[in-house]
Amino acid sequence: MTLLKVRELTKQFVSRGEGLAARKSAFTAVDNVSFDVELGETLAIVGESGSGKSTTARIAARLLEPTSGTVEFDGQDVTRASGKELARFRNDVQVVFQDPFSSLNPRYTVERIITAPLTYQGIAPAGGRRAFAQELMERVGLNPDHCQRYPAQFSGGQAQRIGIARALAVNPKLVICDEAVSALDVSIQAQVLQLLMRLQRESGFSYIFIAHDLAVVRQISQRVAVMNKGRIVELGSRDQVFGEPRDDYTKTLLAAVPRINPEWDRRRRAREAR
Ligand SMILES: Nc1ncnc2c1ncn2[C@@H]1O[C@H](COP(=O)(O)OP(=O)(O)OP(=O)(O)O)[C@@H](O)[C@H]1O
Image (cartoon, rainbow, N blue to C red; front, side):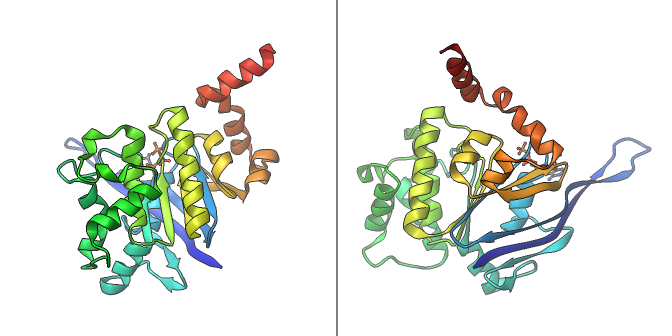
């Protein structure tokens, strides 16, 4: 079943020039992008910095308005949704950002952070907020006894787990991970990836997984969209994109992997030295 249908999405940013001869100029960050996300699958969006990955995801999550194009979710056109319809969409689509600390309110306890989405919606969990938060903390591998602690008292990997717990609090259908593991050390990254995959197996939601690290993408995704200069230049199964890339840009990106992923480079050199 198709959960998300993005069609012909374009986003232009208009900048006002400076000085007396100031002229407005438009920059196309996302250029006629279309893709689907099936229920329960992970679609990765890869591409170098500035290729339009985050802008695409932000529009898909309705955090940003497109210049043109449509977003359909669960059979409904949500491109211009408002009121209750938008509230339901915001519930069903959750985003986990790159920097866990800047996306968690430093003055809130973990319990308050995790239950905040429920508070906004006026939902009171049956067993109480504390038990609800603690159960989610356990699910994401955090010590539930730490529910009264503040974000600064956690490591980067643990803080990202708090962000993931908060996203899951409202039973989303789609979780958008925007470089969600990029800021973590390689070993912690692997643990958080395992967690993300386990949670998907348990709950059956979909991911849009944005990353520049192709090793990570290869591990987690079923399908891959490759973006270059605002356009999707290739979209296919993981095995097709990695094994038989058709587009020249994809080939260049794959060839550059050792340079953009030091860990792969290290492993490759270790293999070659054997
Ligand atoms: N609010 C904005 N105003 C003007 N330009 C923007 C804005 N947001 C993004 N851009 C530009 O749009 C282009 C695409 O940015 P985007 O963040 O989507 O790329 P990305 O592929 O996610 O890159 P990164 O991996 O570095 O986050 C970039 O050139 C960026 O500078």
